[in-house]
Length: 160
Image (cartoon, rainbow, N blue to C red):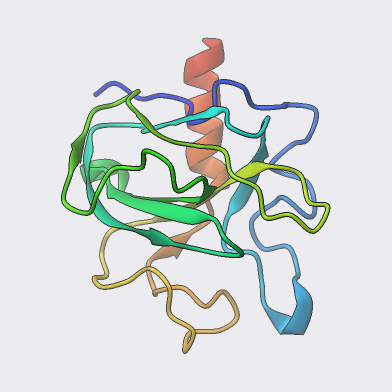
């Protein structure tokens, strides 16, 4: 199975493992960050990490959009805070490395980024569940750090 790092133009000086970009960092109102943020230039391409099928393609947060893809054995990945331009439709089949969007921008002085969430795929329905605090996501949410670490070592050819 081919796998790709989702943001070729990632600005690596802003680690997805550090607050406020990391999984589990605290947010206002008791909410907890359900993903990892990969800072990149506005409009930079976002790639599918593996082959898959688009489960949901819709608005996300503060004028940005999201694409949620079932990547089979890798699980389900939400690619959030992307521009609404040229995103694949719900039901579309995507290939590993295919461009599925562009980095969007929330405004409010925040850096343009890809917000990425990882789910095991053992639950069904929308990945957002406001009745499931503190993440407000469905029950199969996973820490995306391990997934990103594995993709980064493949990209950099540093896997052991």
